[in-house]
Image 1 (cartoon, rainbow, N blue to C red):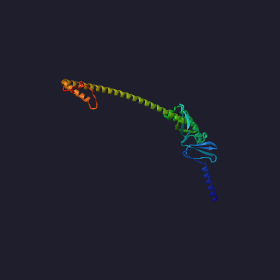
Image 2 (image 1 turned 120 degrees about the vertical axis):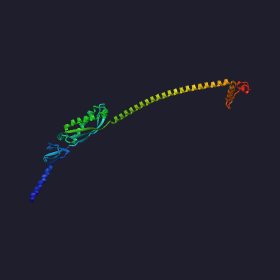
Image 3 (image 1 turned 90 degrees about the vertical axis):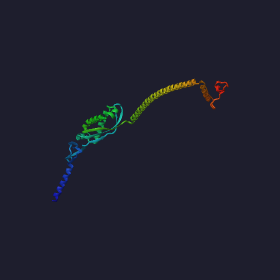
Image 4 (image 1 turned 180 degrees about the vertical axis):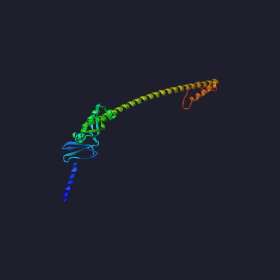
Amino acid sequence: MRRAILVVAGLLVLAALTFRLAAVVVDETNQAVVIEFGRPVRVISEPGLYFKIPFIQDVVLFERRFLEYDAQANDIITRDKKTLIMDNYAMWRIIDPLKFLQTVQNEAGATARLDDIIYSQLRVELGRYDLIQIVAEHRDRIMSNVTERSDQAAREYGIQVVDVRIKRADLPDENSQAVFDRMRTEREREARRYRSEGEEEAAKIRAEADKERTIILAEAYRKAQAIRGEGDAEAIRVYAEAFNQDPEFYAFMRSLEAYRKAFAAGQTTVILAPDSEFLRFFRGPR
């Protein structure tokens, strides 16, 4: 009885060990290839519980999910002979695990192949455009073409390239300095043009202001001379009327005004003969 129990227990242990060695669990994130003596014999594409022959067959698991490939920055020449330091990345996945195993074997090998494929496609596609078109105009079209052609080339390795994107595009240091110098030169040229236009406009404004000033001063001088002439004429008329009313009295008043101005204190010294006409009113009432 005891021996029977030991035999049954041994058989159960052997069965459990055999099941463990033979059972293969493939979850929803993986796909597998069954290998027998180094030769692929079966592909497992759906998740579930599968079995293999222990010690004879082996199972290689591959990712079913999207994988990321991040390339190192490389130099690329554009159509206008500008050098770009291009840093790109790609999303890819394994769609044929058997072909993948036979060609690149693992993800490291796939990454090496993708590096060659994507870089060559980027170099070809970017070489068809000028720098300004790559940066500002046709970037989406370029990346769409690179993705399509890279995917076509990668299919022979059981790989699907889902998307290729430029992560960073820089100019070399010497090109950056040249671009900076050119930008500075263009800004200086624009500044000189603005200054020249401003000076020209200022000269026009000053010329117009000088012309207006000259016209205003001339008009003011003309009006002043006209007013002065009218005043002189009115004064002459008043003097003439006064003279005609009483010539002797007018002569007397005019002489008094002349005496007041001529003999102002501390201003004038006059030397005249006693019989001078200027002093005739000092000689008597006649």
